Length: 232
Length: 232
DNA sequence: CGCCGTATTGAGCGCTCTCAAGCTAGGTGG
DNA sequence: CCACCTAGCTTGAGAGCGCTCAATACGGCG
Image 1 (cartoon, each protein chain N blue to C red):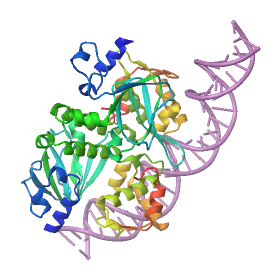
Image 2: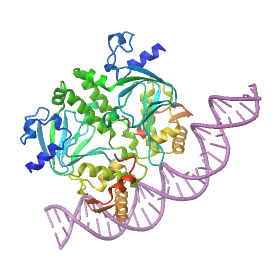
Image 3: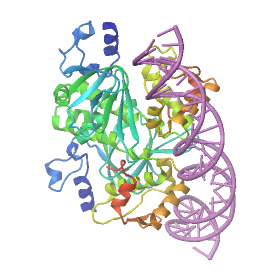
Image 4: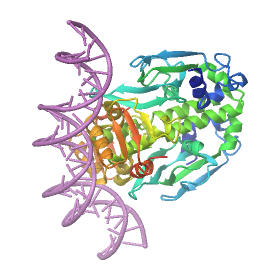
């Protein structure tokens, strides 16, 4: 378990803002300057509510979360999913309020990073300044596959994206979907039925093997081709 | 003309990185530190090509541009439009190459901002550091209406967005669409025919008056309602 | 004035949605 | 240990929105 936590820190995109010599050698915690504390969440627990005052960025240390808003139709419009090593809250800098409610999908550990701490930390560190622009630029590039032309393309690209973000080991082409079919649909603007149908079709065509939340990618390159132009 | 150029600078989101006392009082040009030079483009002229090495951010001083990629189907997938006062190139920080080709839609004046100049400028200026995070966060919030559920919603939200970015005077509800129906379609993932049909319907319903590129918003609040959840 | 790119409008098709009926897995209680 | 319950998933039939294909109209430019 301690090993897992360390693994998470090693592959965390935020580690330059957090890690120090102690961490690299195995110790860590609140000695670093930007991270204030950790939070532990159970599935369905809320990390922050839409419209609440923005104070903290959060870094996912373990587990998966979703960011969503309720749209006019009362539908849950999902803005994105966040997994280990990813930073959330950047959108809120602009509006100074959280734009989305963020909810745990699994058991979750997040690091709380007060935005003021963060600004103080980067103040005089040019490498961290470059790094944060890099990370935000990365988020600008994400999610392009939302615009793919058919449900099959969107879902193929979504699976490739998930695989690249969830697979600890590139060689194990199997992972657990942390979200429901409905969540995938709310994210891609498809119905849960369409998601289910497309996944079944991809399975029939031997591109994936899927059993509820257990999924194995059988032909990664084929999937990439189907979702092409939209997979990085 | 000189007045227009100044007006553009006054409402430019990038002016903190550019303006100085001289500018504010009427003079300016290359005295400021981040901006290197201006470029003048005619319609269809290319500012930068997709995959070229990223060196500069650009700030639009006058006119309109589109950023696009060709997708698998050979279709032109438009990532966004840029108007006076807006910054482009943030996506390229991540990949260190331009992600999109950027082309002028009208006569255009842009300011070239070498990224190295820019990094030097913000190095020790905490207010500019905050400002750039704010601007990038703003871009993360843009384009949410792309996900609206129907063509009518997307286009209504698109028009509201355009109006807020193009109208010099909030009270004049009339402006020129700088892009073609096909461009709008390529941006919203609709066909030019659908765009045309929806615009005609909005006109029939007295929400807008449109004649080719000339458009007048008749019922801004109604449009906002239709595109709701997706207009800021 | 004639040409060509762009915009409009119509008819028919197909993908995704809606509505609805089973199915499965996992949890609960006897 | 098994019957039951429920939430989530799967699958089917029919409807509607946006797409394709096509014909026509408009406007800018030489």
